[in-house]
Image (cartoon, rainbow, N blue to C red):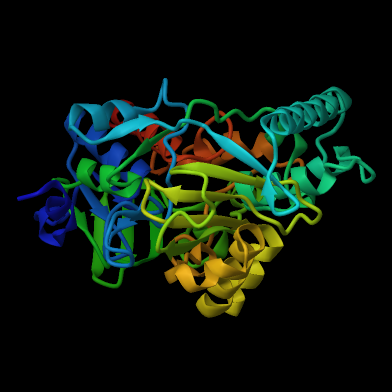
Amino acid sequence: MSLMAAVAVPGSVRAMSPSNPDVIVVGAGAAGLAAARHLIDGGLTVMIVEADSRIGGRAYTESETFGFPYDRGCHWLHHADTNFWVGYGQQHRFDVYPDDGEEILFSEGRPAPRAELDDFFQSIGSILEKAWEESRGMPDAPISDYLDDDHPLRASIESLIINDWYGLEPHEISAEFVLNDDDDNDWLCAQGLGTLVAHYGRDLNVRTNVEVSEVKWGKNGVTVTTNNGSIRSKAVVLTMSTGVLASGHIRFTPVLPQWKTESFHAFPMGSYNHIALLYKGDVLGNGPNKYIIPLANDKREPGLASNVNDTGLIMIYIGGDLGRELENDGMEAAIDFGAQYVQSLAGTGSGSDLISGTFTRWSHNPWTLGSYAAARPGGLPSRESLRRSIDDRLFFAGDACHPEGSSSVSRAHDSGVEVAKAVVAAMT
């Protein structure tokens, strides 16, 4: 069986689980899969329940839309020097490779000279350095407070924050969170990052299409109520997004302490999506795997990945208010917006070269309610509360729980490993 076939067959991840395991893991994304593996290695019995029909969470690769692997969620392997998935991919003969990092600045509808790109990044660095200096020793505030209204690059840096980095508007995100973040040294996976994560979880005991409605916890253990009955265990590892945790869709009995519920809201989920458009060829004419950055006059001008893997695919990254509007307007409106935006860069002739398109709507996915989390202004200290377990019964893991920087599938994995170690220590 081929690698792609092995990860596509639901039965390959659906072995029988113990009816009353030591630990229930809720969520089969990177954090849940990593937690489960390390709990099993620690000698505990585990059941993983997943509300969706597949494993991987926001790491999701599919080939149905375009006929080749397309990442609907996570795409880059950030922090490659410490990223678990890079080594895992190499070990299992995936085609993982460094992103060449080649970026092109578009100014007035055409590529700008390299010197202008260098000047652009130098100016962006100066803006962030100035913000860092001004924010030192001050109460945490929105990053928007440190952006000069009159700076000629104000719209460009807002576009980067919203559409490329966090999926939130500058007034919605902590300056401290932004200014201490670092995502250098990115790699890619030709088969798709979602394929890589699905391969990692291919032989774990996962029960899909199982929706959790209530978690009862106390000195005698935990009872998890689902649409497929109730399960008892000694502890539960909760790996849902902060969006799901904050929504109240899962009832906790007794209710969670206030410090815990406040931590969910301190890390809101951004709206970060792709408009993916397949063209007959390289309509922008810059070669494969180029990242286009607009010298923006408006923060709603997004960046895009052009001619991904030499397929003709363009992925436009949309976040913040624009992302939420397009999610609400629906697929057709988003594709139309994307096609018109590409035309503004490539010229009117590109429209006839468009084959098909799609749009991800992660905020409308009931199992995620957003793309990934970032700290609201003043919210960063709540990360310790988000990470903290309750009475050695309720444990929390996920990309938002990692103690460093922004959310990523790498940090989701590491959070799952860390929590598994804590559970094993508490129970053995």
